[in-house]
Length: 573
Image 1 (tube, rainbow, N blue to C red):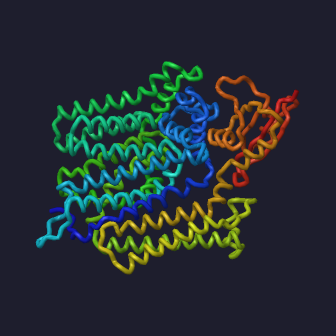
Image 2: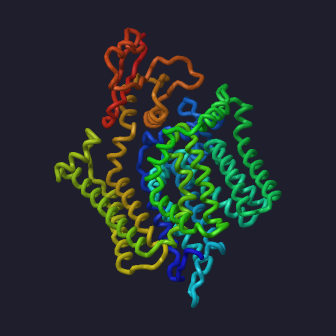
Image 3: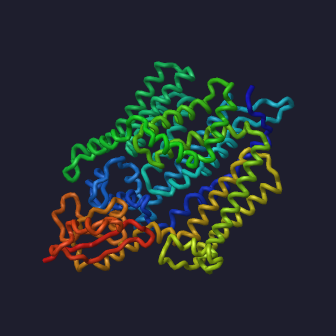
C-alpha cells in the first residue's frame, strides 16, 4: 500500500510571484555590495584576468599571471563573458556575479522540473480516496516541485556556496540539470534526450573534471538496469551521450594542446588535478563528510531518509531509485577523495532535496507542526539577536553585546545605512506576515512544513548581508591592504614579484591594479612577501629580502587577521 494519502486541498501550488520573490531575496543579498572575499577572490581574479586578457588567458586560466588550470575553465568563461558584456554598465565585479545569478536560476529550475516530472508519474500518486477528492497528477507534481525547491533553498550548504563565484557552485547546478535530463531520458528514451545528457556531462567535465560525470553515467546505467529498460538501446544512447560530452570537452582540450598558451599545456595540470581527486578512503574524508554534511544538508537529509523508509515496500519507484543512486555514487566519490572540500558536498543537494520532497507527504501532521514551531521559534530568536547586535554596535548599548559585535573587526567604525536598514526592515516585516499567515489560517498545503524554515533562513541571510555587510567586508576583504600597497609604491608601473596566495593576488590586482610578474616576465625590482606574524626573529634573519640589497617600503595586514602579514621590498640601486 502506498504511504501517501492526501486530499486535493493539500496540493495547492505556491503562487509563482511568491517563488520569484523568494528567489530574488535569496540570491541578490550577498552579491550586491559585497567585496571579493578570501573564499572566492581567486575565482573572480581568474574571470577578471580572462576578460581583460587574450586568447592565452582563456585557454590557460590564470590569476594575474599565476596559472590556475586545475579545475577546468567553464565557470571562469561564464564570468569573463559577463564582464565582457556588462562590465561597462555594472562594473567588473557585479557583472561577473551575473553568471552566479544565472547558475542559481539554472539549478533551482532544474530541481523544480525534475521533481515535477517525478511527482506526476503514476507510481508516485497518493492513494485514491473512497469518495474521490484526491489530487490530479499535474497538481500533485507541482506541489512536490514547490516543496523540493523550498527544501533546496532551505539547505544551509547551498546558502553558503551559491553566492560565491566558484566552480563548485556551477557543478552543483549542472548536476541538478543532469538529474532533470536523466528523469526525462527514462521517461522518454530518445537520442535527443541522450544528447542533452551528454551536454550536461560535457559541461560538468569542463567545470571540474571527468570523475563526477563518469560516476553519474555509471549510476544512470545501473538505474536503467534496475528499472528494466532495454539493454541494447540503453547502451547505444548512453554511448551517444558520452560522445557528445567528449566533443564538448575537446572544444577546450584541442586548442589548448595545439596553441600551448604561454608555452604551457594546461591539460597536463588538469589531468594531474583530476588524478589527485581520487584515492583510497581515509579517516579525513569520512570525518569531513559526516561532520560537515550533518549541517550542510540540513534540512534535506532527515526528510530524504524518511522518504527511503516510508517507500521501502514499493518497487521500481523512479522518484526514489534515481536520486538515491546518484546520492550513493557521489557519496562514494567524496569518500574516495583524499582531501574533500565543503563545496564538494554541493553535488548531493539536488537529489537529496528531491527525495526529501517525497518524504514530506508521508509524515504525520503532528511532526509537520513540530517542524513549523521549531522553525518559528529558533529563526525568530536568531533574527531578533541579529537586530540586537546591530543596535548595540551602533549605540554602544548593551555594552557587552557591542563589545562582542566589534571584537572581530578591530578598528572598524560602524555607520547607519539607510538603504540597508530599509531592506532588512522590509524582510523582517515579510517574515512576520508569513508567520501570521501560517498561524492564523492553519493551511493544509503540503509545502507549509518547509516554507517557514526556508523563509526564516532567507531572512537571516538578508539581515547578515545588509546590517552586517560593512563589517564582513572590512573583515574578509583585502581592499584596504591593496590601497595601502598602492600608496607605498614608487612612481611608475613596475612589475612585482610575489609569493602571495591566489586570493590575495587576485584582490591586489583588482583593487590596486598592481602588475604582478607574469608567466614570461623577467625579474622585477619590487617584491611583495606574505608571511606570518608568528615568524620568530631568528627565522626572520634568514629572510632572503632582509639586507643591504633590499629596502622595506611597507608592512601591513588586515586588522582582523592575526596571522597574515605582507611586506613590500624594493631592490636597492
